[in-house]
Image (tube, rainbow, N blue to C red; front, side, top):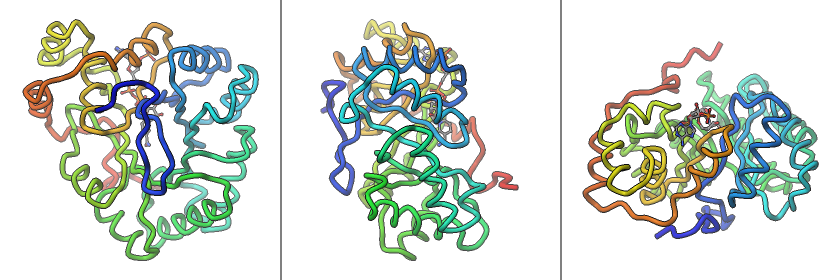
Length: 281
Ligand code: NDP
C-alpha cells in the first residue's frame, strides 16, 4: 500500500520512481514554470514530466537551477519527439543530448519514446537508441509512451529489452484495463497521463459522491484510484492550491467497492489521439 509521497515504484531495472509527479505540458511562461516547480517541491513532489515537444525543457532547466533543488531530490522525465525519432538512431541520440543541455542535467531519470510513429522499423530503431543511451549512462531508465500491446511486443521481440515504463492516457473514462494487465505481467510500470481527464473530472457524479464521502475532491479520488491500482500519475496544474491538493492523497483509502465504482465509469473514451489512428505526418 502506498502511504506517503516519498514512496517509490521500483522499475524493472531497479530505478525508484515517485508514484506522483507534476505534468508540465502547456506550461510555457518561465515565471509560471518556476512557481509551479517551487510549490510542487514544497509539497513533496520530486518528479516532473516534460517532453521536447512541449518546448519548455530550457525553462524547466533554468527554473530548477534558480530554485537550487538538489539533483538527487529530483526525478526528471522527458521524451524523444517524433521528428527526431524518424530520422534514426543517431538523431535520437542527439535529441537526448539536446534535452540534457536544455535541462542543464548530466543525466535524465526517465527517457521515453513519445509516440510509436508507425512507418516500418522507426520506433524499433528509436528503441535501440534509447538502449544505447541507458548503456552510456545518459539516462537511468528508458520507456515508451502511447504504446499499445502490439508496439510493445514488436520492440521486445526485436531487441529483447523490456521498457521500464509505458506512459499512456488513463483516467476513469479510459481505464486501460487490458493494457495495464499485460504490462504488469511483463514488468512494465504504467504511468497515467491526463489522469484528471484534462479537467473533466468535475462532470462525473460518482466521483463527486465518493469525494463527499471521503471529504476529498474528485481529483483526489481519481489520483488515489491510480495509486491503489499501482499506476504512477502525473497530474498537471499551474495553481498552487491544486498542486498541493493533488498531493494530499496519502491519508485515506478507497474501498474495493469504491475502486469498482470508478472502474464502471470506463467508456474507452480518449481525450488525446488513438496511437493506432493518429496522423503522424
Ligand atoms: P490532466 O488530466 O493532468 O488535467 C490537467 C487539467 O486539470 C488542467 O486544466 C488543470 O488546470 C486541471 N486541474 C489540475 N488539478 C485539478 C484539480 N485538483 N481539480 C480540478 N482541476 C484540476 O491533463 P494533462 O493532459 O495535462 O496530463 C498531465 C500530464 O501528462 C501533462 O502535463 C504531461 O506532462 C503528460 N501528458 C503526456 C502525454 C503523452 O503523449 N505522453 C499526453 C498528454 C499529457 P490548472 O492547471 O488550471 O490547475
